[in-house]
Length: 563
Image (tube, rainbow, N blue to C red):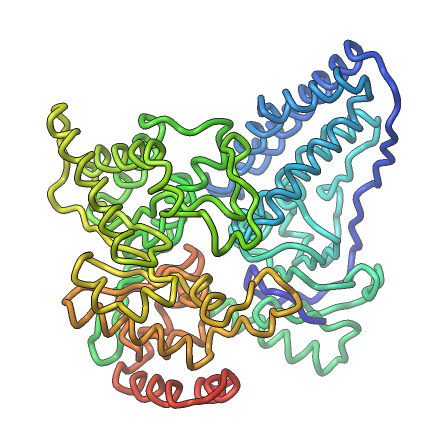
């Protein structure tokens, strides 16, 4: 069976099928005062349990992973969530568990419909926390993974962060889930505890039997059911080899990212909040290539203030003061909605009123963020990046607002760094085609392949029907990347990539050959990419890129890359 490998490794063991108790929630009329008291008690008990899980997991999780439970504590006590549930109880005079389920489903649906994979993963946090509250309201005992006392591979529909935090490496050798993605919190935590994991394995619960032997190949994303003796021997050897390779990666933390023929390439990390910086530093990143500031807004019940934003940006810059931190301005709107911001529904949200388009319309929101960024600039090497730029006028308008706020702050007596870099994401074909013109007005480009590919192929990557057209290696996409890199170099500026393609191992030789100056990937991908780059020869990579560009299909280009 095939899935997505999210935490590298090999495991061979019997299956333990893990199922959470099903909650039967029926709407019934109730006295609001009684139900609100029940709700408050369930929230109190849930908070105490989450605190306990956080304390127990402190030894095996990093501060970043432990912070997931801070987020859960904030969520279980979230005033917006609580207010909506109470309102529903009072207005409809219904039972608390039904009200929690109804409100939770609204939030879950909102996050699951988002394009950004990291944002979609937030839905599992809401499910985790609200399930816990509803279980207490229903009087149902929570399942306890920590009681498993023999070597197994867990198979489940989904593992929540609470479940994952309780995994004991002595007995849980790996896990397989039907749901989940690379950026789900359970995947992040699995990498932290170094437990092999494969997610997104459809029908796993139906196809795999409790107690049967399986091999979990969390390198290729394969699950082998009822393996032969030969397969077990083969994968046992492979497991030993994997452990040796992990030790080799650790030795690269302090090494430079440089090709065999001496070409230096920046290797940066993508982050969503200041708490991610521990993993960035731990993996030896050269800096931050993408700080998604929308999480500041998504995690709040109202627009974050200038001071709140300043503190968040300052924390990131101060953690690596000598390394570049690229902070992307607000990329919200369309499919990424804020409950407290009235953004009208659109027929084509990916092509609509979002990112810099929204910011240039709502300059009150934009100016607040620009002021916070400029104030924070004195604490490190700041680079400000504008997303979703389609025209030169949009870029000029954004830069004008930035300069106006800079002048205003200087008049108010604030210090501002004079070395701030200003750049833009290239994720719209019009920007790639005119890269040579845009390059004259910025200090850098960063290619956002997630959107660039779907716009180039006119294929919504959230649509299963046209998913086959989401082709990162299609020659048309490669030519847009080449135009962008060449346009940057012609103007003497650097060009990076922060989309998912930058983290795909097979894409690395191609991107090096196309002349990319910087890769920005998830922190856990830093060392594997560094190892690959250090094994490459730039001139050989240029030959690979030239052959890929000459292809007429994705299939041909992938053959050039070795499949």
